Image (cartoon, rainbow, N blue to C red; front, top):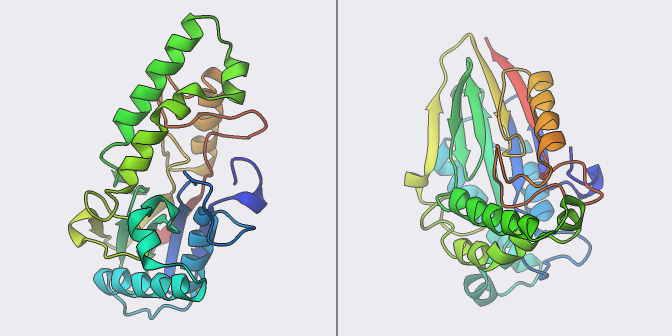
Length: 262
């Protein structure tokens, strides 16, 4: 479900005989686009989705990280994007997080900011700067509200988001250094989370478009709608780096898959 529409969603789901994956393309932080008619986050999601559909079932997590990195590098070359541009401007890369279940190995791979549940137990792999940036945004918005700004005004012009945008740009320089992302550059395995899942388990894979994950889609959706109704700016119960902008359905794209491991 896209925050604005299905056609613009940067989230995607892949289900094959060998893999189940939720892919979360990163929200664009710059006007630079690799393809003129598509955000870099959506391009990343579609590129990774197509790659997973053709993956060898015997592939392990390090092999996947190496292979998808090479694949995206080739795409940059095909699209005529210079390597120096990607190094100097990491926020212009096609970037995504992914949580992937390997059926044959009964493993979950978490690359970037994503979440999953195994028999009701939550696992995350959050970016190190996300909470601080969300809190800074919340402080700026609270100050604006105290000076007379309305919620609706701030849903049209998010002054908190504008304030933290330089910090978000800086954090993009740390991807695949301080935290993992899929972006065509070397993925440090120490920032990738790998979980071995025993048989007869129930698994939920989801993007971070759900502020709190539950073991059913209905419960996860109900909680999200409750938070949106109470706090559309996302500055109270679950401070975020963006809120529900005017005309949008949620603060972020979201994807949810629940599977039974037999």
